[in-house]
Amino acid sequence: MDLRRRWPVLDELCKCAVGFPDMEIWAFGSMLRSERPRDLDVLIIYSCREDVAGIREMGFWELSLPPVEIIAMTRDEESHYDFIKITNARRLIPA
Image (tube, rainbow, N blue to C red; front, side, top):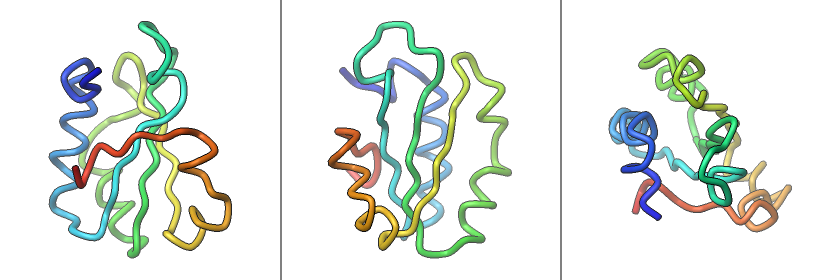
């Protein structure tokens, strides 16, 4: 399933994230298993906290339908929690 095609707000978020070269965008949660998820869970892996604030300001992600729920972690945090593996997250960018 092409998640960015299915939910254009994810495509928009990914296009905005391209401006932050160290940022990774991952999809996880019910959008990977359901045709009608209540929200779109997104993990942002970042190296610069200001980049996360910048991407949050580029769109009203939480007001979309379904709303985008963003969790942001550094690479070290993700590695510590093994979040990607535990949630079976799927990378959106970089591809």
